[in-house]
Length: 323
Image 1 (cartoon, rainbow, N blue to C red):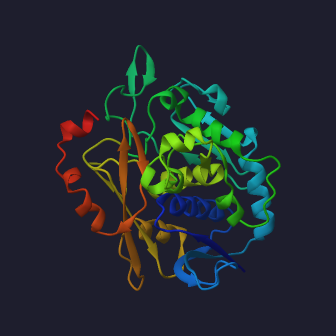
Image 2: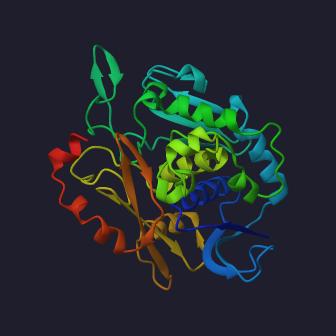
């Protein structure tokens, strides 16, 4: 049995979701793997007294071999397929087409599906299309607009894959989360690289002008996997009033869990489902808007995000549909 420790800032919903994505991957290799969260000192060798959020994973795997394998698969174009209307194609062939999902092949360990951006599609002129100019059909996880809309989810994923350094040498899973490169992400799941001036500490215009934009491409891709698996978009119907699991209006609610749990229970705990004997730490992250673009903010303790954005709860359905 191997104990793996992933050190992140759990207030960053993108980092939390990326860990969820890794938990999904690890389950493909060890169905008995378990995970838990704790606050821990000594996680940073350069600052031993600092506390950090650590996801501790127990699994029967070789971490170095798996990290190297994942590094190779993430930057391999052959590992990625986009599901379009009549076929599965390479990511770059899905640009400007309706895309119902992205498949990431682990090779010998199955595959994961990313489909966080929409809830349902429409037929127009004999083809599948989204609902242009309306929130209908799109999940709260669809944060992009404008030029990114034209590239589509497959194109945005392709951009991130192309940003991963080649070769990507990793002997720990933590390296997948820590890899920074120049650029920006269309998925906008990583709060640490959002265009929000408050979170970045520098305005978006200044960041772009000074060529200081940074992105964590592997983290963004893993976060998309985590969002799709742990907090999927609900499909249209009476049983799906709020659109996305864990999201109400523009508040994303999630939890870390304080006891070792298998994946099936970890998914429930992450969604704030109470489990006997398991301590949950609940956080809320506001999905901010910059024009037509959305982005994830750093989370606050449960309740404070809603209080700080009380007007969101009073939005009418009509206002929400017309965003």
